[in-house]
Length: 311
Image 1 (cartoon, rainbow, N blue to C red):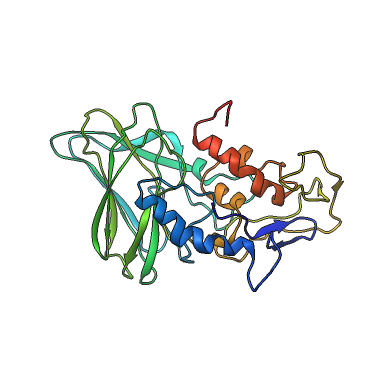
Image 2 (tube, rainbow, N blue to C red):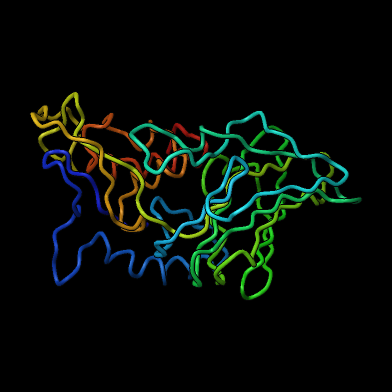
């Protein structure tokens, strides 16, 4: 993955880079300057599915289209065929606020939709129509819920400036987070769309529909020194994870966002926006973002794998 990132240093009450500036760059940005444009596409072109603990799109614009409501001119709609869309029993994504505080999970704030699959007859389709703010290249992420009897071949179609691209997504895994499909060119406005069909090789399975995210966006996780006290020293990855000396701030801080594009931020903040449980990214219980950032990545892999006594 892309190494470290812009993080909130509680001892100083400010956002800063994790690594020192050297040769007119920082490791926080330098590593991803070749990981994202070269290494990741190479792996994907070889057939790998690459999941990253940080935002992978450099685009500062972000469009969220969701069944629980969208902003600007973006819309979500459904058409019913042989089977009917209904609310899923699982919680889903909702973009309820401009900034998110510690522990808040957008993937527990809303609803998701679901229907049964059909192999023949009229299909049911969910359609996300984004209002693209400006012409450009954007990453497209989908989200859904993994439920009992989920389909393993959910058919997504992206209608972009270059035509139409189809994806078969295994919804038996990856529910409740952002799943990257690809980077595509979009024109400004509402001429493009993403669809999900319930057409499948197997009848009676479940496909679920939740939010679609287009673009990388700006950081929206607000941080402040832990009111109960924060660690006075950062624990290095090579050191034993022991309790550090605690210090309580004498200044009344308010939560503040980074002011940086999300791709520049550390993994801790992307994980929260991506619906990862706070037990994964909040390893120090809000006392040290530096430690949380690197310590959470391996645990995140374990979470993605479904948990393991080995990992």
